[in-house]
Length: 108
Image (cartoon, rainbow, N blue to C red):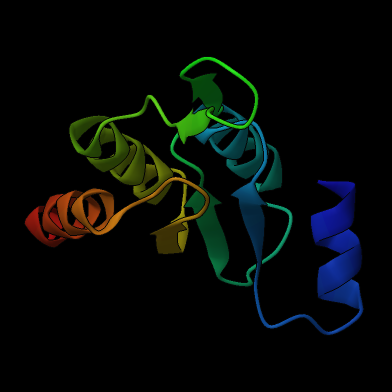
């Protein structure tokens, strides 16, 4: 909330949360920013916390556990918290963005 307030005071065009510790952290940050400013709120969560799959040196592949359907639900939550610029960050694939867009279009 303090960072959002400071950014608004310094002339930011929007404030929000990006990447971090997944959708829950972005949701918490948005809740903290509510009422701080009239600037547009931005929410761009990653698709969870990555973990390495595979074994052996150099064979690990990053796996993101949040599904497109879960990202769609998070997008609806972000919208309800006032975010109007909503997207994805690390691990968010086209399928995630498509599900989020469909969920937000359904809101109207």
